[in-house]
Amino acid sequence: MKLSIPAVLLALVLATLASPGSAHHGWSGNSAGDVEVTGTVVTEVRLAGAHGTMQIEDADGNVWDVTLAPGPRTHRSGLREDVIPVGAEVTVFGERNADPAVFEAKVRRVIWGDQTFDVYPPE
Amino acid sequence: MLEFLSWLEGSALAGFLRGLGIWTYGLLNLGHILGIASLFGAVLLLDLRLIGSWSSIPATQLIRPCVPVAAAGFLLAALSGLMMVTFNASEYHGNPFFYLKFPLIVAGLINVAVIQRLTAWRRAAQGQPLVSADRRVLAVFGAVSLLLWTGVIACGRMIGYW
Image (cartoon, rainbow over all chains, first blue to last red; front, side, top):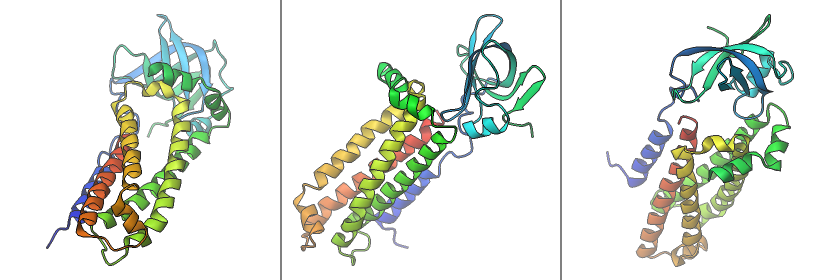
């Protein structure tokens, strides 16, 4: 079989496009294991952007960036922008950022009082 | 650079987009993909022709549809991409794929500007006969174009995995 230059280039292009697809988008940086943080809300839930976000301050005064699911999915879990007020105490469960100096976690579950929001429900 | 990204994140455009609802980012992402598909689809066909495929099809017949489709696709991808960046602009600081992507885009656009000034391109676009030196130079620019735009897309895709 004769391989033309265009065919080889096309194969290279396709190989590049088909490369790492196994990692869940955005979780690769959160491999420091499970984390549970209880704190007070300093920035309420925002659903704009690639993922929903909120900020909580733990008992040691560390402000955690909480990364939730994408906006529509977080919204569907019941965790809308106006639900949890600033100052409320919440507990979040998720995976901590791989960098120990960074207080950030990808969160699967948020508990506020008697309400549980499973933004990524357990399988 | 961080200053610029922070400014972008706090800009009126960013505030406006954030206020448009929870599906805004996803729809911008859709626009970005449609833009990339149009740009790269047209680029792929045209560049493969310049490299030497389908030599029985006159280049002018591919240049006519491919160039405007690629240009429109680029515009759509650039606008939607810029808007997506504003949401969390400062988070991209330090992302090597993000910082590699923009020089590659500039290189791709320079490649476009240069090739359109070549005599060989003008002959090809107007359907005039090409000499073998014309074919060689167009093949080189076509190959460079394909590599650059592939690099841009690869960087864009990898930004989210860094």
